[in-house]
Image (cartoon, rainbow, N blue to C red; front, side, top):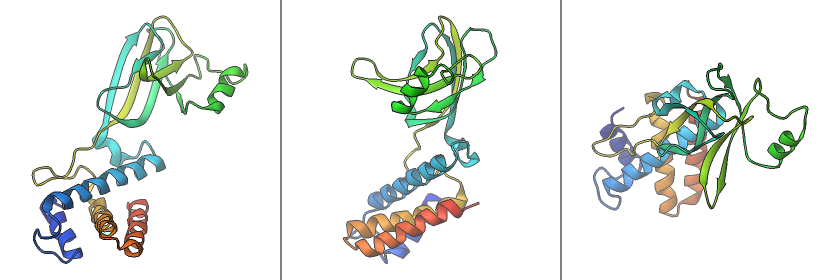
Length: 205
């Protein structure tokens, strides 16, 4: 479905055929938010979902520390896969991608579960001094990494088509309707449409 078709269907749903109370910019913004939320649901359900491939990007290098800066075009902390070789030149091995929390600290302190070359881990850690970084363990002095991550989706506008698969375009329109209903303080209807949106994304093939 083209961006203009999505706009027209949204306008039909809000009973405003042309820009009046709701501008085209506001409608496209609501559609953009719907696309973002749909992508997030897909990622939370399965980070390797093929419908996310339009956002996926690879990065790899040999480094002398066990961390890299977050890629500038990475969307939030959405890592799809991470691979690591403690010694540069060895085969990279898929990492378990973990959250930086107490469970990670316990794992690292447990000699039976701590990361080794055949079972590496990757996690994102932030600090005031260094900012957000992706860390790999076990650490090495010359190591190879490969990551696949999600880039930031482009905003839908009069000149930019949606990136998400066409089968989810109707769901995005329903989200946008929910968004506008909520701004109009029609919260009960907005809640119902948002619930419909979630079901449509999760049930879409």
